[in-house]
Length: 211
Image (tube, rainbow, N blue to C red; front, top):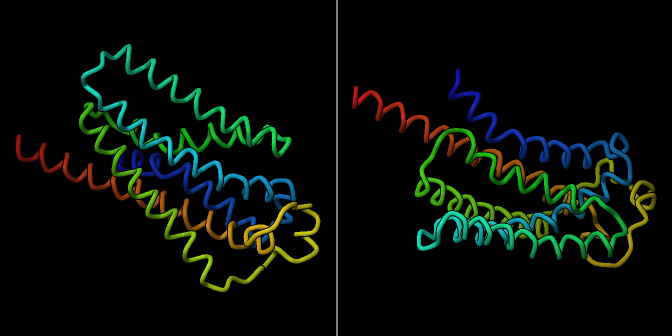
């Protein structure tokens, strides 16, 4: 039971995010125009979070630095990426980017807290998570560009109520980025559940062997 809960705990944040994106596609009026617009922005912020996670993995595994120096480096790296988030906040005149960054950041690393791990295991998990998310991100962009997607609840009237500015595929066909988010975070949730399940199986096998 404990192993099941740890697997669900690892996957839950991304599963919640995926469900929000699916809701925004099927029944966006439940969330409202502002929320749907914020979810579109979330996919840009996720790119920043995904980009930063590669550096977090590298810094965390740098055994040549003392724990204090690594901690200071991680704080500095966070401050650096917050500059980009502040830019998003200023450009879109919204505090949503800060909230989204915090949620996505916690979601990305929450699987590290599901069970004790040594530094080597944590570093390997961070690296594999980054590789998987990069694959899911690029694959999601490609799939939603080439596959025709129904609008469902994102009707012309609803999209007009969002008051989107600019141009491009995501602006002209917002269902592409919304479906992208639903698939991407769904894949992230599956990956984290799978990794946690695999780790539980390996741990159980080791315990049985040693016992």
